[in-house]
Length: 292
Image (tube, rainbow, N blue to C red):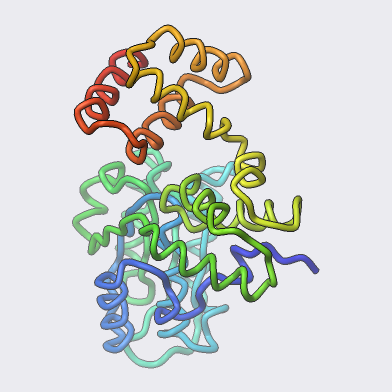
């Protein structure tokens, strides 16, 4: 069976989690003492938020983790009522655990919940506080209402560094016998922007589609414009040839990319482009003026 690599290589313990070492140290302390607070785990996509909570749950709950840990998506299309009922049933079910160890509910995409749904969950947290702890995973903690924030410890993850992605990608390439060139790996890192999930998905798709990781194959899989076109845009800007630069931008736009795509692509590339620093700053400012 062809298992997605994001699942096959998902860390199972806190020691295996990549990045955010200070946060992982704090979670290990929770595991040692068995005293875990309600948590709000915020950060960008693919930085290990949900994976880290599952690793903490395994460390604390051991072989009881399947019975004593429940993960739900807070944006479940069936509605928050279904989510609440599942939480109530789970929290009400008896599971034999060591003293002072509670069951854990993981709510992913918690920042997508309406204020009313969050208020309802606050009441559930109060009712089951003696038996259950809650972990809210979200991209933006400020979307969580203050009454929930005040009942939780807030943990802020940061995106993974290029070096952390590089080490993990090399490891997986070795495990899967994937052929690659370093420019291809750098393209994976560049397109993923610190998102491990995106990096591994792009890596597997490229390896499956082409059998080798090269820069050209990666950009085809990721549906990114040819990097040479982006370089031409910057070079035309350096040479003062704004019409030529905008002609290329228009060609990219007409090939199906949205304005938001263009802003993101240009912004990502201008940070690493070989252009004078003053022009880099000016380009960023002009870029925002044009597209905002």
